[in-house]
Length: 236
View 1 (cartoon, rainbow, N blue to C red):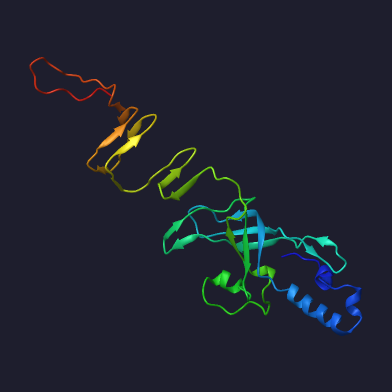
View 2: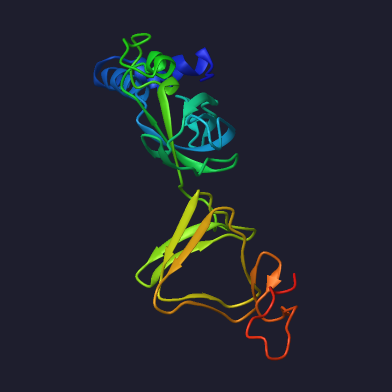
């Protein structure tokens, strides 16, 4: 966190607070409270450690500006190397990394967490600082725009939407449904191992269905002879 020593000393003080009595006492208390960081909204400036990798960190800019004792507005500065949240249990995770421009929540630990960040284990605090800007943790997803790629849950069901493509990767994929339906285009199956489709209704499609390069609607057969009960394989 980068913050000017000038602003650190001024904070909420003004000339009236030096007159003694209750006003001065209240000013001292207010000044101490103002140094305690709890949570604030921030904008992501940069991200490291994305994708299939250990959870990374973000650099963020607090969005709520600050006031000094004279009423001047100033930026609290940037916060660097803030660990961000990923939904993960053991080796299982949902990877949805933050990107620059995201708005999210930054929460600040009650003690110095720098040693824990380095060791990823129980550690003594790196210093005696408390509720400090430098001990932030980022949780994304506040005040952001309309998503273009998403998983949507509602009473009517689950929707997985992508404007580009969806890839399922596994040695074996099993789908259990009464029917599998496509509304446009073709249904292509290219299985290196085994793709199992089970259910009473089979697979239905408004468009063509392909296995490899062989079309269900347009394929032809070769080696067909009148009176022969067997046909050749479809032409590719």
